[in-house]
Length: 325
Length: 158
Image (cartoon, rainbow over all chains, first blue to last red; front, top):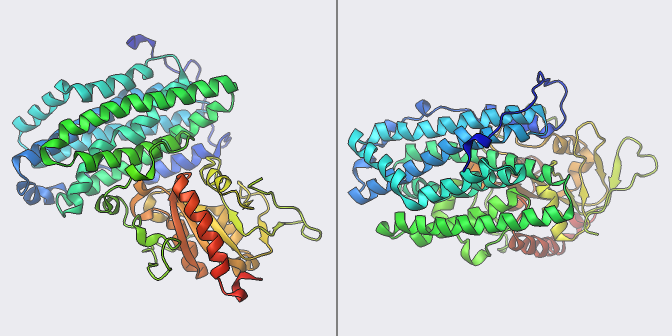
């Protein structure tokens, strides 16, 4: 790894938001700004009682999962999103990456808010020491980091999208699991805000990757596609070990792996590729899916039943400013 | 070809007419477009930009539309879809909705589909994520064919 290779943008001109080259930049900027939040807004202290009902093993697992997520957010905020700026196609794309970088730092800090609310300083320090020493966690960060410092802009976007849309999910599983059992529900609310942000990040970086692909040869397209799947396999194998390492103690590893497959497919789709894992191994526990989204269950598939099982989705808000009729 | 562009019709200078039974919106991310292509059904795409003239439906149709998540659902329905549905004739011919989205957006997953279904009083038939998996494609393909045969004759015809 040669950290000195990471460059700054070579030329900067004053950004004109009244002259837009790609509407997606404005859409995503607005989406991210509207989604802005801070951990202080979530009443984490309401989880103190619930935290006390977890066994020591479960508490240890939860802390380790969150330090693992902290590492990924730190990597993405400090290096990942910043490394995409010199390759940006439009000035507004650069601005979006600065927003992404800052939000990743907010995410990283929010785990510390959870820790300081629920755990002792000694426990926190031990969990962070574990994150430095865990081989699989370090490996996943190193793999991604090596491409951030590399000299291929499109590979950098692939690595970044896989981090945003795949690598977080071995960790995100646990707060969704606790939430489905009515535990640590405020912590889960905070994690859902992070998940929402990461979804926009993965979507946007994947979109910019596809924009970048438009200008390259067919051979190069094939090379990058093959490379994407190779990297996915490499990261996946490591994720499986990481998952067993963490979750075997509570017997949840197989359930987590389905969630990994499901999210690996979505990460590939964000890059414009077809899903890789078949439906037989992406049947995520319905309790986890509904902790993620209350509209994600099978009751919302009119085609599969007689139609009698159809349930009208809960509309959060049916008002729209310029909805005329 | 799976996606057929709508043809301009005589006397419809301001809008383009379409007889497709599947009408969809997809932004420049192309996710919904890819899904519809995989269906291999005759389909018409709404204009990507709001300054373009919208389509005029000629036959009953199912609308496929994505939700771009977050922000408590405000502005969930794409402006281009609003422009299309603000035409009363288009609203009269809608028979169902299929939503695209991402479960990571929590309660707003496929919310635009819910809103349009509620406003137009039709069913939100199916939800899929991003560009859909091959299972989604199979189910929607079969589901739509059955849907049109099951629909009362009075509704399946204009």
